[in-house]
Amino acid sequence: MREPSPNHAGSLIAAGTLLGIGLGGLAEGIVLRQILQWHHVLSARLPPTDLASLKINVVWDGLFQAFAWITTLVGVLLLWHVNGRREVPHGTRTFAGSLALGWGLFNVIEGTIAHQVLQIHHVRPGDDQLSWDVAFLIAGAALTAAGWTALDHRRRA
Image (cartoon, rainbow, N blue to C red; front, side, top):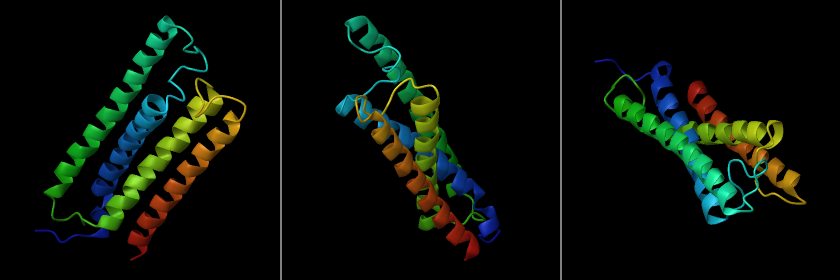
């Protein structure tokens, strides 16, 4: 039986990061798209001003949610696999750091590509949309930094 080693934490970090990406996507979709109804996946390109365009946006929202759900499922399966491996250290700080890293990376990547590069939607369309988009990116960067710090602390310990 192998003893836990920080060198074997990669599987736990991968599982936590995938879970963070998936859960971040699900949270963004549930809160911003469904509860607050601030935007849909294509709302800047195809404003949901009539039933037909709303239906198209909702289909794309569903595809986005399916991607987030599948990513979460893969993270859970990896976590299940890691659970049985004695050589992998099972630390709360490592797992929580990985979740934060994944969620933050999701926000930064999705916010940069969808909001800024492709401009297919914005966090909250309107006069202050750039402010909302930048706040989303800052939140993502903060989560990424917090996750990285937790993981770096683990590495240095």
